[in-house]
Image (cartoon, rainbow, N blue to C red):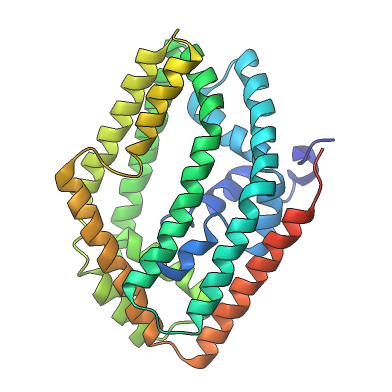
Amino acid sequence: MPLFNFRHVAGSIRLRDIINRVRRWLPTMGLAVTLITLGGCGVLRIGYNSAPELSYYWLDSYMDFDKVQSRRIKTELSALHRWHRKEEMPRIAELLMQAQTLALQTPDGARLCALYDGVLQRTQALSKQAMPTAAAIIPTLKPEQLATLAQAYEKSNRKMLGEWRDAHSKGMDSRTLKSLERLEDLYGNLSAEQRNLFKARMSENGFDEQKYQYELRSRQQTVLQTFARLRGTDAATAEAALSELSMLFYESADLAYRQHHEQVRAKTCHAFAVLHAQTNADQRSYMVKRLKDYENEVRSLMLQKTD
């Protein structure tokens, strides 16, 4: 029996909305980053239990798989989901417990960055587990599928620029705007003074949108070039190349950009720490409850059986 019946929920839930809501939590740092792919308990339950189908839907929007590729991808995503439920969900629950402890304290930026590193390790573990499947599929991609991927990248880039313009019209950058939205989900309402404090600290982190855009496009071109080069190769060759490629998403090949990223990262963690230090007991209690709700949801999902 499938994990997720699309027809059953089509009338009330748009799949793209679920995907976007799940994915929008990924950039947040500090305490909020422990939510990783959690965009609300209801969305977590629907999104996680239907992860193979949602992941396929998202990947297919970039690649437009043929029938043979689709069958392989769907089978592998189901296996990856079973692995993740067994091996990774307990680790995510542990991260949420750590976040609850920190929420009642006044951690500095370094401790929040350490928590973020724990989340990053979980994404790296998932990437490593998925590598053999990617290595089996990438060499089978056709030129028209690579063209579809290039077009999807451009569409995503245009959307990002639109989000940046929208945030600028509100007097801040997109990262700050999105972070404030997520922080209010965790703390409840923030006061005007707290919001202004966070905006001021975030404005000091040195984030350069042009540098980020250049790095992003560079990575996208490297992906396209690597995928094209791997067409027709064997799985072992592809896996070695893709493993090397995946590291670019955790550490840039450009030393100057790596240094810029580390500076922004440290100052962003500091901004979260400064805000947290100014929250009151009610806001911290609210955060602990939210994090506990997420932890309970994760533990419930860990126990569910799948076919």
